[in-house]
Image 1 (cartoon, rainbow, N blue to C red):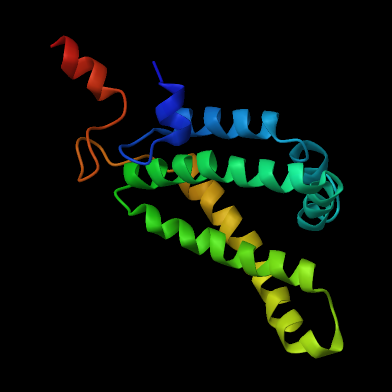
Image 2: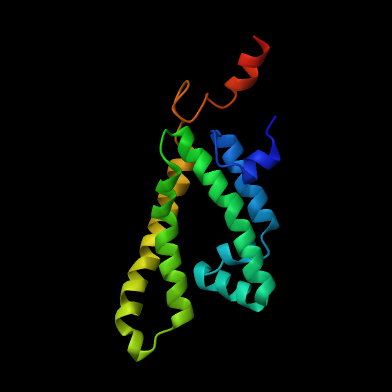
Amino acid sequence: MINPIHLFLGFNGRIGRLAYWIGLIVLVAISPFSIWTVLSQDPFRDALAAIQSLGAVGALWTLVLFVPLAALNTKRLHDLDQSGLHAVLFYAPAAIGTAKVFVGDTPAMADFAYWAGWALWLAGAAGLWFLVRLGFYRGTRGENRYGPQPGKRAAQATA
């Protein structure tokens, strides 16, 4: 049985693919903007517009959802025997893309806007890589430096 507190708030240990997908589905379900923005033509901009329309509550809710998402990604990376710091490859381009939306396309920021446009493309590529890598690749068999294989703890406790 998956402990929801550890699943969404713990950064230690490992989780398997099923726990990862369950966690992502829960986060999407409680996110006030993700369902309609994912189906739109410009999901990133529409998600930011949804957050902005909710004002401070939307911004706070987004930050609150970032913690469980980071916890899920970190533990899934641990299952693949990788440091949770590899998640920076996903978060850095998204942060730069977010800055582009808030700065806008002013002439003074033309160079930044150009590079931020590339960052948005990288954010999309990184997001696709994360979905494939974390959602579909099998974790390390047996124990690794981050702990026992998910599902093996219960079997070891009863033995």
